[in-house]
Length: 156
Image 1 (spheres, helix red, strand yellow):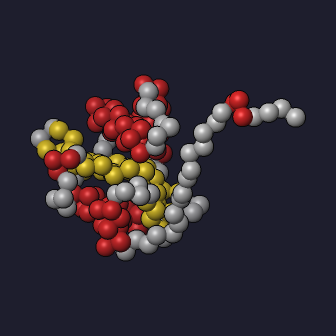
Image 2: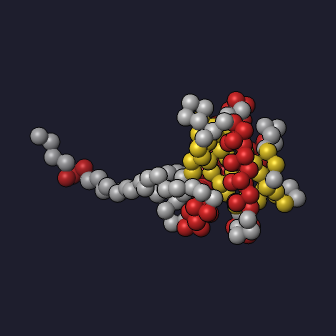
Image 3: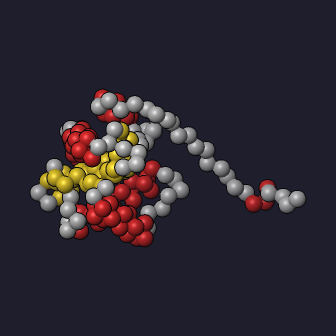
């Protein structure tokens, strides 16, 4: 495992692409585009330059197999995990656990008193890993998709 450097543009692009792809899969009304990927990459780069963010990567040879992106929010003394990703063939091997432990060490070094991570409702494996590592559920976000039919809206 190693800390990603700004000079590693290939990995920055790949991480931005995967991050946007994951968001598209998780949210039915989110669409990954070349612009969203470019903006995601720019966001990661700015955080790394400002030293408020960290990206840890795991690779096999030169292939990216896992990464975690986190941001330190100084005013809140909190680290927010933006994304944790492990490629399917490498899951269930302890990589995610190792990445999360490294982020915890980074959080301590930054002076954080809390780490926050959002986990998809159907990702019971990650929920279990978080609970195992001492995380607690603070809130449950529920949503309802509304069907909008302009014909039903009558003007008064």
